[in-house]
Length: 120
Image (cartoon, rainbow, N blue to C red):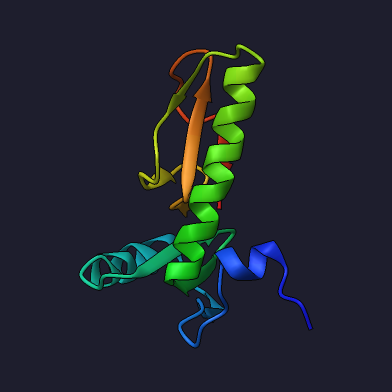
């Protein structure tokens, strides 16, 4: 069987990312958990509508993230669309009880309260 280009570039390893089953918490409980998780490298945590998702990161995940970012940025350059890449900074809105860490995010045009595009 012939390997596809994607399989050659992005090999499947035993270190693939793992999703931890979502759990339901209050915003205050989430903030406590987030403080604990912040001390652990290689983990991402998201929160929306009371549900928490914890994800481990792998080399394969990082490779895919970078390929997607390159494609997005090439498209924006080709279409002459002004953008500001702002990476993976944690995004939170306590009023809406939402927190996530995108792999990449972008303001389209000018800077705003939240990015226009977030890749997770």
